[in-house]
Each structure stands twice: as structure tokens, then as C-alpha cells.
Length: 265
Image: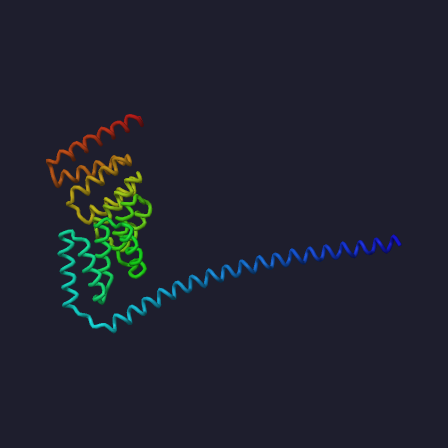
């Protein structure tokens, strides 16, 4: 009899172990299945989002092809918008620009102006929304990134603003003002060597722009790059020999150089 009990207990133990193992395996399979389903749902959402954007663009193109471009009416709306903008009549400007957008065969330039009106009128949130949407439609337009950068500066989101301006100068390397704006941002974050490089690029584009040379000299000085700071001040003096600010800056840098030399001796 004891042998039968031992046998039954052994069978029971084996059954429990097998059942537990099956339960754990089933639970792991279930969790894995849930993860796979979640991944597929996420992938489907991404595909659906891309397809939705493509359908929207295709429908917009079809709609625009079906419309006859009334250039006279479009120009009239733009003229009214420009006049309203000059007078800072923002509500009127928005109205005319929205009407011009509906008439235009290329809505991007008009929408950029509309976003600018929202920004100038103080509605930064609306302007930012429009610029971010425009990036999806025209990702290679430097003006959009530049204006988005201005908004992000107003919001004191400096790192994001730098990203926007970096993209803007990548797309348009011939605009000195974009380099200056980017340099000011880097200088604000005390990244003086990068700021100096931005100012240098701007000064190369406008070699007789004295203010750019001052920015470059000041950034080099802050970075303790006294040789390039002095070079910049002396270059200013070749353009404006009697510039007192440049003379003072050059003298200060020479003193700094002597202090460094005496310290190293």
C-alpha cells in the first residue's frame, strides 16, 4: 500500500510540474502575442498617417488643377493684405491672406506670410502651428525654419531654436543674417567658439560689415582666443581707421595677451 501512495504522489507531482510549466509557457506566449500585436498596431498607425498625408496632398493637387487660377483676383487680395500689414491691421491682413491662399496655385509663400502675420500680431502659438505644418509640405524651405527659430527664441526654447536655425543655414548658406542669429544663440548658451564660427561665416559673406567683425572679435575674446580677437579688431581698423571702439578693443586684447604671456613665463 505505501508503494501505491508513493506512486500516486509522484504522478501528482509530475502533473503539477507539467501543468505549471504549461501555464508559464502559455503566459509567455500570451505576453509575446500582446507585444507583437502592439507593434503591428503602431506600425499600422504610422502607415495610415503617411498615407493620410499623401491622400491629402494628392487631393489638394487635384483640387488646384481643377480650379482656374484667377491671377488678377489673387494679386488684388495680396495687395490688400500688404496694405493691411503695413498699417498693422492684423485682422484685415489675415482675412485677405486666407482668401489669397484659396486662390493661389502655390499656397506655401502665402501661408508663410500668414504665419508671419500671426507672429507679428502676438499669436505665437498659431504661428508655430502653421510653420510646423509648412515643414511637412515644404521641408526644403529655409525661411520656414528661420521663422520657426524666431518663435522658439521668443519662447526661450533656445536648443530647439538652434536646431531650426542650423537647418535654415544648411538650406541657405548665402544669408548672413541667419548665421548672425545662430551665432547669437550659441553665444547666449556660452558656446563662444561655435558662435565665433557663425560670425566668421557671416563676415565672409559681408566683409565690410563692421558690426559682424565686432561680434566675431567679442566672441573670440570671450573664448580667450586673443589672437583672432585682435585680428578682428585690426581688420575693423583697416575699414574704419578712426573707430574708437575697435581701438579700445584691440588695446584690451593686447593687455590680455601680455597677462597670459607673463603667466606662462
